[in-house]
Image (cartoon, rainbow, N blue to C red; front, side):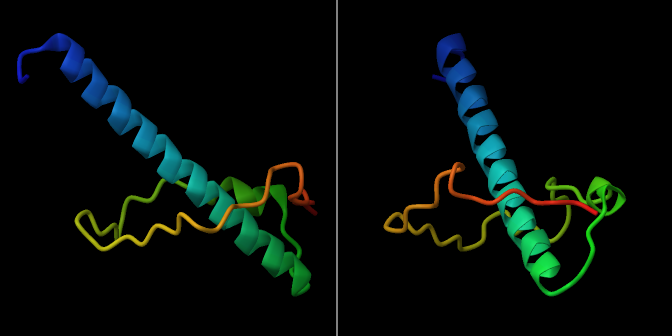
Length: 86
């Protein structure tokens, strides 16, 4: 398996898929936080959002405990209200 190019390609694609899923979840979480801040009366500008990155490079628990809730269905993107920037 170590020298099988097809298996090596699968591993690369799966790692890319996981990385993209993590980034997507980070974007969803950041958007929820920004929306909550707006509801509290904070004005969020494009400049504010421009300096926030979903790419976490610090404090990542590489082998940490990650809880995955397979029962809760997230809302569809059609149901989520858009973020209005100041």
